[in-house]
Length: 121
Figure 1 (spheres, rainbow, N blue to C red):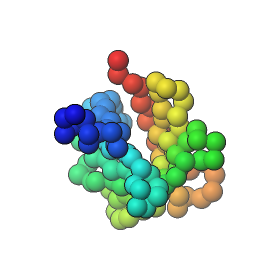
Figure 2 (cartoon, helix red, strand yellow):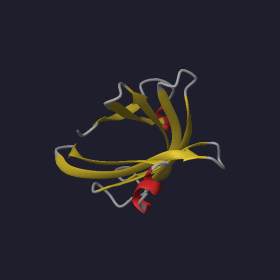
Figure 3 (cartoon, rainbow, N blue to C red):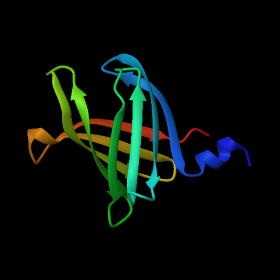
Figure 4 (cartoon, one colour):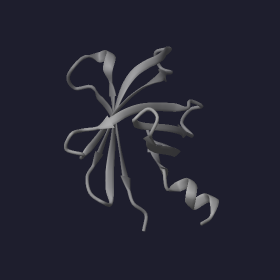
């Protein structure tokens, strides 16, 4: 088994291309289960900014979603370490969606971004 294969058994690596607010963007993300923390962790970077985003969370009881919490910097308002919720919805074996929720704006209608991922064949 190669070093790359052994490493990738524990982590899901995602790379994507698309547009964000009309501009081309690229994203690299890694997500996996941390046995010591006993929860899922993720980290991502994109060509949109210079931030490294990270989060930690758990599967919902039905196993159809992963809910994680983290922080991000809001460049438009100057806010640092703003709390956000990342809701991963597993739509099928071939597709999942990532919702990003802005927690400081309230309890309802907090979704500000949704990203769809499709498995490349």
